Image (cartoon, rainbow, N blue to C red; front, top):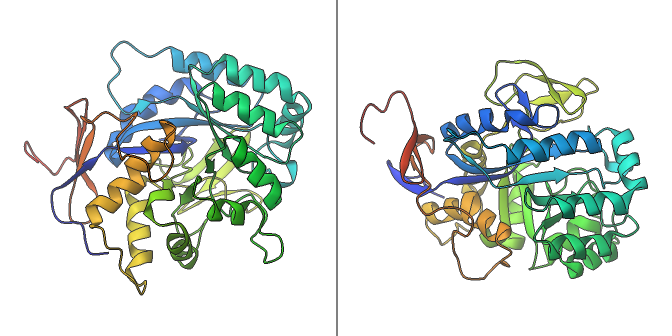
Amino acid sequence: MSAVPTSTTLPGFIDLQINGAFGWDFTTEPESIWDVGRRLPRFGVTAFLPTIISSSDRSRARAYAALRARPDDYFGAKPLGLHLEGPLLAESKAGVHPTAAIADGVSRYGHVVAEFVANADVVSMVTLAPELPGAVDAIERLTQSGIVVSLGHSDASQSEAVAAFDAGATAVTHVFNAMAPLHHREVGLVGAALDDPRVMIGLIADNRHVDPVAMRLIWRLVGPERIVLVTDAMAGLGAAPGRYLIGDKTIVCTDEARAETGELAGSLLDLPTAGANLRQALSIAPQVPAASPQDLLAQLLSRNQARLLAGQLPGSHDVIGTASRQDFVVLDDAFRPMVTYIDGQECWRHPNQGDSA
């Protein structure tokens, strides 16, 4: 892929999985959604799903209330609803999610699903493990309520994953991470997702969660229509190096985000960097994608996300969907945002850009 030309204009970026930024963690401080949203346009983000990891009923209730309490003077990236990543997950693939919250949620599976459905006005996406008892029924209930279901934090077999996709799940959360590895005799969730043309592939392109070689393999298997770049960013994004929370865990943030026990814990990735990393990974591929870099980046950072949220399958008519056509970002030749517009109004401008883009 060649460099993006100077002053390229793309649809505003949509981040479907972001746990916090600028020192704030959404799970412990959901009221910070609006503070973070005001700052996200510097990364070209015009819409996002604040992501709440496995937590208590009380914590989720606080998040529902926070999203409903939009400040009257708010102008920033648009929260399109919550992404509830848990607690309906496999404890064996918890990562930094608190196992106590997972165990409590799974033990009251029906109650938690009913809660999600009752708050469908502010819940846009739920990540769950499809091998849990009752998962197929839950997926059907959630999707009938207009909630997108993504599969993740899972030890599912191929057959369990396929059953979930047949029930209406349309995405996989941070592919390869927090799920059983691809095996040639039991391909599991990874293989089932890559093989199924109905499924969007959530990819953290930070060169840590997924190696560039694996990114190229994903690209060759699924192509641009099914890749959704996400950040999985946490409170350390846009903040000074230090220690920050993700849920109840303290995370050490230097050039990456890791729990004190050493495992990756979210990321410090922003979407422009994710796009640049994938472009770099693909630049040495034997076959250069036929589409223009502008079209590809718009698809991977905005259009695919909008299509997923709008309930459209890959390959369907390419519309912006839940993203306003007046939300766009102007990029320089290094693929960094210069100016971000929301609802046709300038929301953020790089300090070196002066008065005109």
